[in-house]
Amino acid sequence: MANNRVKITSDIELKDRLVAINRVTKVTKGGRTFSFSAIVVVGNEDGIIGWGLGKAGEVTAAIAKGVEAAKKNLIRVPVLNGTVPHEQTAHFGGAEVFIKPASTGTGVVAGGAMRAVMDSVGITDVLAKSKGSSNPHNLVKATILALSEMRDARMVAQNRGISVEKVFRG
Image (spheres, rainbow, N blue to C red):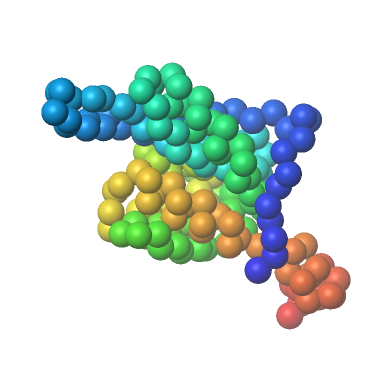
């Protein structure tokens, strides 16, 4: 599999989306202590995506930490005419996702956590289904794993050392 990591530069304008926020309670001798964890997805809506988890005592600080963490693990995803190049499945923990290309005008047919990832990466037409766990942590990770395994014709040709036309002719 090709390395599709992206180094962040100043010309990449990333938009962040909050996927889920969770209030965590720690019970101590003195009472209850509340903190927050936030799952954030960042992307430039043109094939670059990353996710992060932030934990803090306040919601805004947790979101800010999540955005910073997301900027550290960006990947590039091939997007062809607003959809994915081929079908793909992926597992992470108890979550399993299935992503399938769709024709123009279909829209993003996906559930909450998957929809945020698809919107951030710039996919406008896709059919997606999550099976198993609906935990947003694992859904985001499984969706990004499936997207990271996507390959377009140019990547296949480059890996095989042949021209793009030969990829289609077989």
